[in-house]
Amino acid sequence: MNRFIMMLFALLMIFSSASVNAQPRMNIEDRLKSLQDELKLSEAQFAKIKVILEDQQKEMRKLRENMDTSGDREAMREKFMKSAQKTDSLIEEVLDDAQKEKYKKLIADRMRAPDRRRDRM
Image 1 (tube, rainbow, N blue to C red):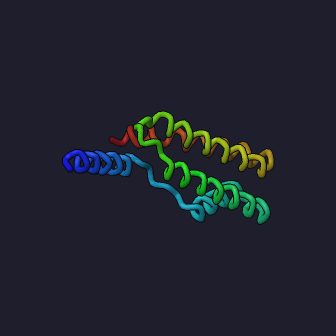
Image 2 (image 1 turned 135 degrees about the vertical axis):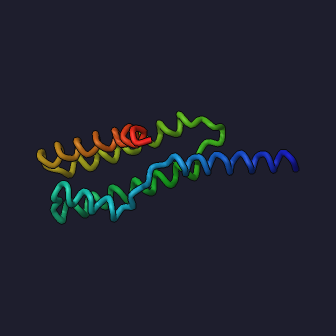
Image 3 (image 1 turned 30 degrees about the horizontal axis):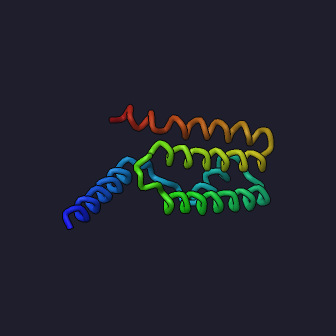
């Protein structure tokens, strides 16, 4: 019984610390609106990117559900990063050259976001 309580406590600590450190996630609609505003997507591009983001959401949910309980956070981080990179590549395939350049800048800004949060602390 003690072992069960300790395991439950450990899981609680892991999930609570993950939620504290996690950056706020945009839902698909917010992300699409942001991309629409930044990239001036056509209706066809909007529809294609919506499907890409919905597929990524399903993939990420599946990764979270099948999370390795061994505690290898680096391996899980790598899987999440690969999924995000795949999504970025698929989105770029839908964009024209000017939009691709803007999108690459958005990605670079997104990658620097954790640095900006640390600077504020």
